[in-house]
Structure formats: structure tokens, C-alpha cells
Image (cartoon, rainbow, N blue to C red; front, side, top):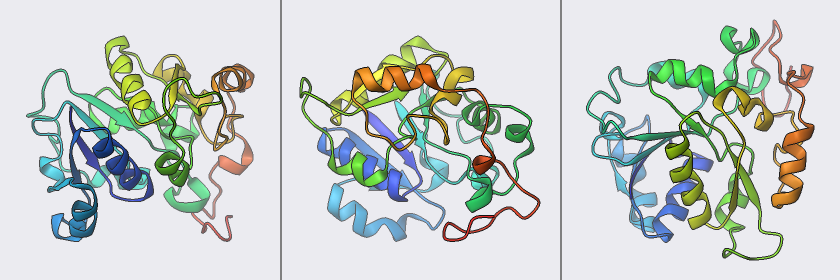
Length: 231
């Protein structure tokens, strides 16, 4: 597949490496421009592009930038994209650590439903509940006992099928975690967040999740703080 990745941080870099290893064509973009991606391109064979070109001609686009930066993306980013383009959202809302207060999420929207509204394109939520290093290093062949399993949530069954296949190709099992409005089950503060579960344990964790944002993951009047000293 032809995959575009917007964001070259920890998750974006890990996915670029894993998708290239699985044989996919990868274009990667960030806010600093293609020249800043020379080392990653040399390592992986991914093609550095401008953000404005990240969706053009792609089958899949991964959006993996801080939520507070979504409004800085070019307008009409998906205007020339294929009508069948699948957009994957890996984001988590970190109000105290990075993003500040996002009213729509504080008022009850799931993170990815809010992202969808900012992008103007349907999204599938995936790759948000696993540490980037584990995503890059801990994939295993299909059928491996205890293989790490990742949740995939979205409204379009065909899009979810594509994303779940990609999850499998880079070394992880996938479970259908429901619609995008149910993607709160894999948000920060839930039982499956940053825990490497196999299929049975992940399914159980999703079932135990509660649809309420804990205080640790809500904004305060002082947000954002820092990762070392959250407020």
C-alpha cells in the first residue's frame, strides 16, 4: 500500500520503520519540512514530503501529531485524496502535559471524534495505546502465543478491516473495538492504555473500561504543565 505519515515523532517514526519492513511504500512529513527527515529516510527508505503532499495519491494516511497542532495543518489537506482514503488517528489528549484545554473533549467528545471534526475526514483510531518503542520492537509473527493485541475503532467496516490488516502485518493482533464513539475504551486512563495485552486480556480490558475521564486526564486552569511535573 501507499501510506502517508504526518508526524515523525516516536509513533510516526516507529510506524515508518514497521510499514517499510512490511513492504509498503511510505511517505513521511513533519512541520519542519522534508530536509529534516533525511536520516529517517536513509534508514527506512521512506520518502520525505511536505505536509501538503502527505495525502496525495495515498491509500492510507496516519495522523500522529500533538492534538494542539491539528489546527496548523494545511486547509484542504484531503481535497485531492482518493475517496477511499483511510485516515488513522493515533492521538491521545494530554491536557496537563502538552495540549492544554480542548473544550470539545472536556465537554465529552471522544478524542478521535474531535480529531475527525478538525480534519474534516473520517478516521480510524489505532496505535494510540502502545508505547512507541514496543510498537517498533515487540511485533511477532501471526500465531505467536501471547502476541500483543491492539484495539481498532471506527465507523467504516471496510476502513477498519484495512487498518486491522496493517496491524497484523507489522506484528500485532487486532481486535475491533467498536465505533469511533466507543473509542474512549482505549483512551488514556482506561485499563488497556500502555499495557501490552494478548487478545483475551485486551478484550476483557475493553469490557472493563468506564466512560468517564479521570482527573489525571482532565485539564486544569494551569494546563499544560510538563511531562516531568504535570499540573
